[in-house]
Length: 237
Image 1 (cartoon, rainbow, N blue to C red):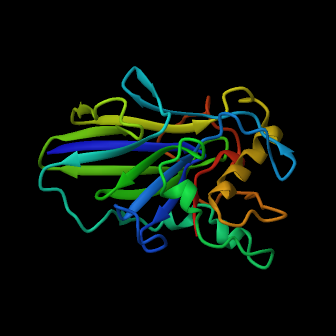
Image 2 (cartoon, rainbow, N blue to C red):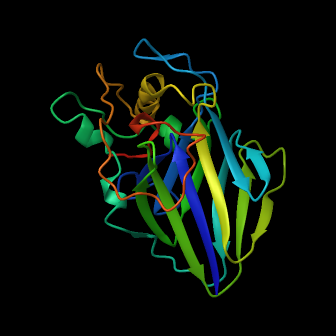
Image 3 (spheres, helix red, strand yellow):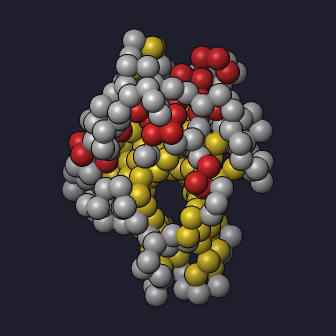
């Protein structure tokens, strides 16, 4: 039996196949490309960097799809723990304040590095959510497999072959989309959450930020990367 854990930290937007039927997996995590973003609705946001960490190796994500692979893995999609459904929800946050429309095809489907740094496609395992010590909502994918698990990274431009990493039992993978320049400035980082709305077809005039996260405490911490609710994952819709 092999157990692998993936932590999703920072601006990671979770979208289901029920929302976007064209997705190749039941769940897709979109890490928007915010390396050059300067403002969302005239609110200044510092650049973010999307990375994947396995052990001590930090891999920049610059236009790729990531997935876990295991022989004989279930094909009916991940189990969604009740906590996962309590991640900040973009549609709920904007209720009565404007229509987001459907997710943007350019951002969530078209593999455009201009809009997205990475897609993490999830076809099996269990997704849950928790609150980090400084208040950010993070998501966790737990996979138990009778067969060895590997991680594949497929570059969108075809310039490199698919990269495959064998994951040992007990491996922890960190997927992050974070601003590393303001880690101690809670108020400044609060507006980072606005980046989630760039996945929408319609950018709202007054995008809302969660004020508090009602989730159980995380059994882990990435406090050096996230500060407050603005650095949370989200669900869309």
